Length: 273
Length: 311
Image (cartoon, rainbow over all chains, first blue to last red):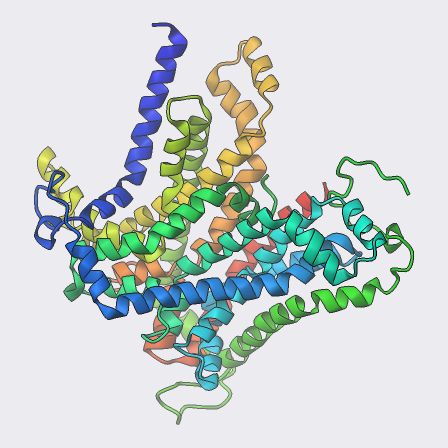
């Protein structure tokens, strides 16, 4: 065998070994979801077993699981939609009507992301209590929308920047107003960028756990809070926990894999391309 | 007006308005109108809670005892700063941030180099290795706690038995270490994801030239790859720091800060003050400390990002 081939095989072995170790917890969780509760806690751990959907049936049978899942969906997609609506005009004006203040505004928006949530836990909690927003879908939607707004503006801005101004200018020559310009030219041209921005915002909202644990109790609690309820000692049903967890992370994992390239751009605010 | 087609529009900061075609002098109003909603919302979201936190931190204010009220001066701060629990929490925060940073950045850099090489099934292996970053923190932490680190039924306990090693009761004997392991598992893929992207822009010719001149793989890594990754690494460090300073969910579902204060960090300490002791004043003073800490990091991060915008 030639040396390049040997090197490639060794690299394959090493890289796959590491990848499998890193992925093992997720693999194990998915596997456990198909076991019975008895097999789930068996020692030695059973690798070969008759797969059962009992865990999934039980999770789905708990009427509240669907409620939590629905809360997650409504809150993460709702907040993303709101953030996009507010961010698109803002990113449009920053990209196509730049002024001396644009850079400052962008950086200032970023800086609001740096405020640690725990630093403002008390006021937000009290304001929400007084406004009746505690444990409500609307409350969490607002928080997530504000939490992701800087990243959404930033990402949209970088995507809009890549559109040659001439195209918009041509549209304007043909008599398009600002609204038509955005609706019929800009949005179709940047749809992939807007979609990946939206997905990133959904991922971040879906996985957010500080505000969801502190601002909700039952009515509006999303999946993060539902999973956290398994942490109590009496909630040690591993097969059920695994089934519920698999359902909770599967869509996000797929979104994440799909958008990883754009995600780097968004998460590092364009500092790494 | 003729303009070259290659992207001159990249980051032309501070371009004066006349760059636009004529008749756009009302741009100021248009900008105000278009950016207004986003700016106003963020301004409110930042200033109102920030102002209230500052205000509360100087008040005597307890949610279950309305008898306690009035201006407290620096009392909340002196009480907090002389509380040994705060310093334990600060120490734990530093340990958590420091270790996770070290593990995720060093590990992430090495893995980025490895996963950049050509090997079989690279695409799929890459997907697997970045997966933990997309797993919601409560799921990740509970899977580790129950199925891997459980002292009786966990996979680690079974492995230890198999190898004849003593079984470790992770969360009672080394709670902070356990949390560091879990959080590193989540954040190393983040570092890897960013650094893998950055490493792809490394100039192959430069590496090839160095190899021709007789540079070994280590020398290439040290003198070419690492300097190339410098900025990406600093961005990773700063972003992780901001998130790691206020790690909460992982502690909430695993140890609840215990045993004792062994795994309580600053965020969890404030949470206990706020929502378990209902001490609004004390919690707010703690919040102010957390904000100051985060801002020290944030200034550097924003500076780096700004520098990047100008070049």
